[in-house]
Image (cartoon, rainbow, N blue to C red):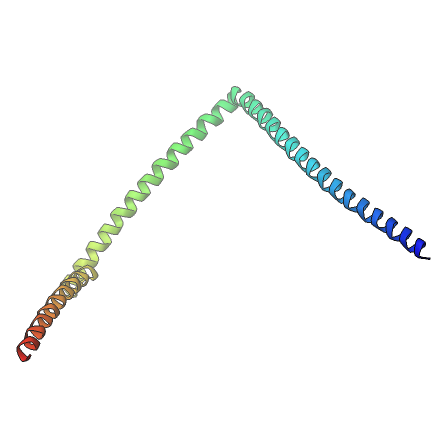
Length: 146
């Protein structure tokens, strides 16, 4: 009976070892297959790009293709010009709007945000200087008391 158990244990170990070897082989084969698929995909992509470029070249050589290419360039130029003009108009409109707001606020004698910010900076500077003066006098008064 002990012999039978020993034989069974040996066979189980052999089976486990075989499964581990198979697992390793499967992983290697999977990596190899994956690599091959990626390589074939890259080749196919390059091939498609070459053929597409060649077909576009043929199309552009035709009168309709030349006309389409010319129109495409004109549209791109017009789009660029229009965008630049629109940006200039937007800047000009913003300046005019800001000037109108400034005039309106001035008519009602209301300070603008820029003026308030300027006054705020000056006030902070004056407050800082006043605090320094007070700290200086406070330390001199403390010295006199001692």
